[in-house]
Image (cartoon, rainbow, N blue to C red):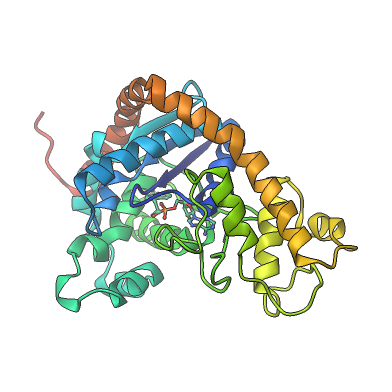
Length: 330
Ligand code: TYM
């Protein structure tokens, strides 16, 4: 059977090089492996406080970034999650099949909620993986390209699918998280033991940073003792992260990247090569992004995408409603 591919990005803040190297860069290739549904997870962005104008602008940016990365709207269906109300409808059903114990063990929830006032943690943040599971299930996706931090949520989706199918008979497709060999976890430039996430201006490279800023950030990235350019996550997390970034930009394996710097014993020279590689990668991407923002071509793409996505999603919802015994009198 042909593959169904689904993935999404949440418009919570500025997209980072982590989002790009972990997923975005690879989507144009992945879209040829089957039928792809690629979306902007805007409902998910409401799980933490966000200004309405920021949410709008971030959503537009993600649409433009998808197109700038090379996704072809004739091949992949691109849409806004909130344009397909079926996600919220399935969520109302599926929330009964995931348990509070499971949800409270999710790393992302634990991380985010531990930094918040315990009296003002929204229910949506806690229930986040239910909606994410619905995103995947609705499109019968068997392949879910993600970075490492999202694997736990896809695993939980698998538990949900198995639970549902055991109870009601074979209904939902079992998804699998697929990660890149290189780039599934890009680390912060200011603390290479921490993941690069959208909320760390010092350690992040933002896809909208100008090239000068990007260079500056890479040149001041935290490195490690010694002078060897070697991949060693335990003893050399900073250098390992920069090697990963370099390898990913140049489409090399870590080993190949390491070989290129065997003779290099100056971190400064190495960092300059990394900065060149990132700028070479992002310069044309940023140009395409700018053109797309100016000609607003994303609007029509998202409109058409929502129509296509809704058809597929509605068919799954009807199937699920029947299975659980919701009466259909239409
Ligand atoms: P989000 O918006 O946090 O991130 C989008 C994608 O980028 C990956 N990623 C990274 N990859 C490598 N290194 C990093 N430092 C890094 N940071 C982020 C993420 O793993 C993700 O693949 N919950 C999701 C959005 C979502 C979704 C879905 C994804 C909602 N429904 C259904 C897949 C399927 C999220 O918040 O991703």
